[in-house]
Image 1 (spheres, rainbow, N blue to C red):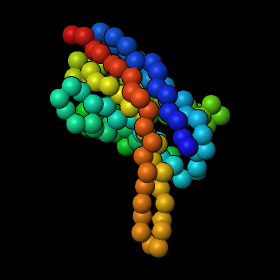
Image 2 (tube, rainbow, N blue to C red; image 1 turned 30 degrees about the horizontal axis):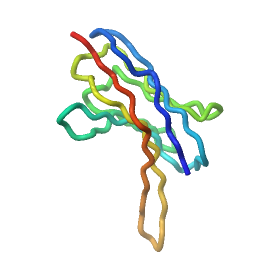
Image 3 (cartoon, rainbow, N blue to C red; image 1 turned 135 degrees about the vertical axis):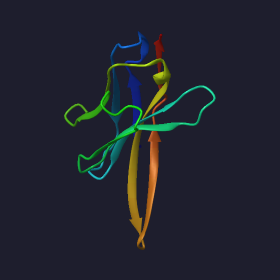
Length: 123
């Protein structure tokens, strides 16, 4: 079983920075992908950034150049450094671990989620 605990959210003024942390416990596989998602009130959960098992990163267009995802394997922690924050970044941010499996030639995956951490950016 994999458990994720996010921290680092809070209230910040526009233009400020925050670093979110996601502490991961349990068995992590080398093939697991990591990611951050967010959900604003009344909106669907959306991808913010991913870090794949081969160290490739992917960012939502809205955060490119402002957010950076990284991982500390020794600490089993994933980070999201957020800079030049905007009011539209306000959301609950969720950490994600995606576990892949291939069975009889078919690809499957299972997502693990944290409980989320609130980020509020004031104008």
